[in-house]
Every structure is written in structure tokens, then in C-alpha cells.
Amino acid sequence: MTSIILRVKESLKRDAGRGIARLDADVMRKLEVGSGDLIEVKGKRTTVAKVMPGYPQDKDLDIIRVDGTIRANAKAGIDDRATVNKTEGVSATRVEWPGPPSRRDVCEQRIASCW
Image (cartoon, rainbow, N blue to C red; front, side, top):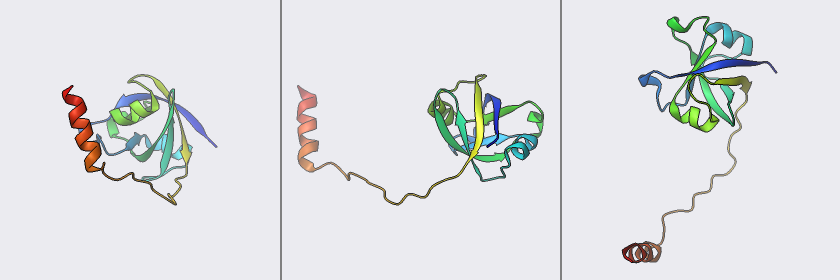
């Protein structure tokens, strides 16, 4: 599997919170990914982002533009280097949700916070 090391840059405001990574077309070609494919972004930790084409002003700069959430999840700051490679998503077979707290738990938390 092909991996590429790219410099991390801040996403533009319109991309924030969307879970996307902007990559140059040449980088996308080397990684064999297209728009909407998933990539791993590895800083000190690994996270996943959805690929979108980079902006014209970023051509040939060897950068990846990601928002603060992806940077935090990857533990990679602006101007750090991150290893990027293609990955496949796996559908969840089960999702667990604990549900809302019971009324008693809420009352006990309120009482405890007063003391």
C-alpha cells in the first residue's frame, strides 16, 4: 500500500467540521484515491478522513488540508508532517448507546453539585 508524507495545513472555514482532507490531484493519483474515498492520516495517532480535491493554490505543495478535529484526532499540528495512505471503511454491525440517564441519577448529580 502506498504511503505519502505530507505537511499538515489548516482547512478553509467552509471545510471545517466536515471530516474531509483536501489533497492535490497528483497526490490523489499516487494514493489511488478519488473524491469521497477514505484515507488514514497518521500523526502521533491515526484517524480517518474523506478525500476531496485540493484547491488550485495548493498544487504541487505536498500538503494536506484538514480541520482542527482531524488534526486533534491525529495529534498532528499545523506544519507537522503526517503519513497518509488509502484505507477502506467498515460498516458498523452494532451501535451501542447507553440512553439518557435515569431521573434518579440526574437528581443525585444535582444534589452532589450543591455540596
